Amino acid sequence: EGSDTMDIGRTVLMNYEPKTRLDAGTWGTMGVGMGQAIAAALVNPNPGCVFVAGDSAFGFSGMEFEVVCRYQLPVIVVILNNNGIAPLNPDDFMDLSGTEERLTYPAKSLTPSCRYEGFATA
Image 1 (cartoon, rainbow, N blue to C red):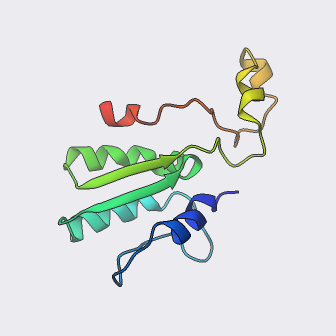
Image 2: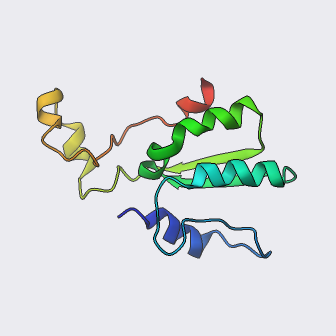
């Protein structure tokens, strides 16, 4: 489910100051977080911000990470890889070989072994 990361963040990542948390709100729209992180870092560069997203949400706006790098913004990026938003056992997916077999799973099933930290090394 797409809002898992946001729901977990609301209960585990405590905020103690007003106006210190931005999330997708009531509708749980995925992909808005990176833009919010950029804006937050520009408005309040000290201390900066932490951006926590699920792998599907990062897929919507992950390329905006280039803006964070280009302007050397104080943003820490945490991506929770729960293999997309489909009910899929990651072990079953990894046992498949070839494009044709993997296309039998829905596109919203993401690669369990995706190395998102590679964005930071580019």
